[in-house]
Image (cartoon, rainbow, N blue to C red):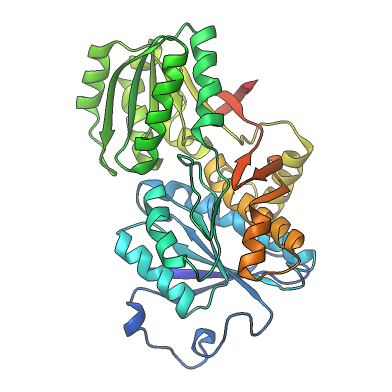
Length: 394
């Protein structure tokens, strides 16, 4: 069953917000509205709530980031509502699964807009979903995309605030070339738009260092038989394997990489990798594994320390690891708050205009968005058991 998780965070927040589940498995045209279903009668903005639809992958390969993404968004809503909401409007968060067949995701988006009357969408999902989703939201509601992505998003009504190759991958490639003398690179990624486009940029950055790409391949989502890929990598003898696999695909690949002995001799650089993935890979298979990101839980800053304290206080010691992918949903809501405060309104056109040029403050510290492009502090980290250890600010 596909369901919406509706978090209603209200004043005080001594306990986590309540969870209400509603069945969204039926197509929008066939959905029966039961008596008392608020979606049957409400109009967008009519009761002064600000309804945010968070489209977070909860299933499929990127579903590993669903728990952290949901918790991080829930924490942001609690904090914002404790401050009085956004421009006086209490935020109500509904979480929709952005995983599974694309047609199903788009149907959920149509339902979210037309039936649940969400005022805007925040997305933590693949770029393939983003490219389709923006056609649903266009000229209807704002759409904030929070995940690491390939860059270049300029569609009307869409603002992307995640890491991009220019600032994430380029400094790390240069560092590995200079410090680790890496010259031969093998690129492997999931078979969709983010790896396709990111690899184009990565090849330029490798060429800048005098290095060469000795192999490249794209793997269907959900692939877990990596023996053929590892055989080709072994034959190519790269110094570094740049990994653009996502979620569970990255976990199974890196496990196999370590188990076959390649981890001891070959460096790895991950793009969409965090502590959630590292936990799945296991300490025994994380040797010589590097990751570049705008966020790591180990970053020593006041903003991150405060976030970690509040996150653990709200969700307890067994909370999902707050890695960069899932944590980005928190950033998305803080970004929304800053843009709305700058605009002084939640009307679509002025809100989006303000969102293209604004500075917001989240767990990552100050993030500057200029002309719709986000700039944040970047870090290069090395796996140390089941945690990442930052070795360089890039």
